[in-house]
Image (cartoon, rainbow, N blue to C red; front, top):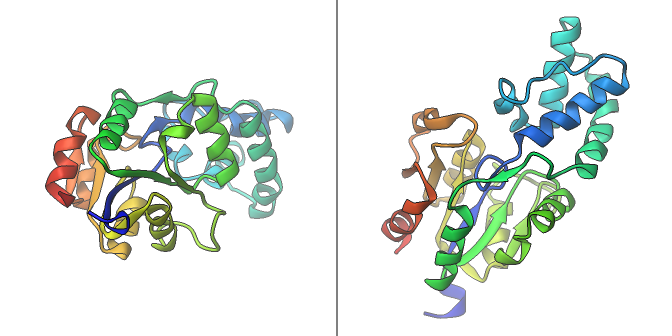
Length: 226
């Protein structure tokens, strides 16, 4: 098998490899606290909103506090949220059970392994470094690495190429409709995890496979791309 034909597995980050919701919610609450408005977001009940991005968390908080959200205010607070998040990015974040063991097995089996996330690349790199797992991924494409982001397929293709792979023999592991739509746009199989923020409800998106635990990843990947 030539280097340009390497089978490749690309992972989303937030909600797929790691539960980052606690630190994301804490960063949003830090913005509200700085405004003298307390902490309107709950790290458990609002976890799903966290994976829809910083602006979604700010919007929910302002709606909860004031009954409506001012988009100009959200735009103003968004950089503050990113600053707060970057300063304390791994306090509550945990890698999902078996994830890195599964990544190690993929490497041993000869697969290329990379990450394609809608988290800004710098923050993703910082988080992976703090978690001690950056060197386990051959490529890393973030929301701002290219002019477009998921569900546009270009970031996925870049992640595959960066991992030395061939898009015709690649797949995406994710947890949301964004990942499902990215895989569709790229014309590749999609595995969705049933332990992410939405839980088994993501089965409604009809991915090529569902994953209940990373122990089963090898078998599913082998079935989908050989």
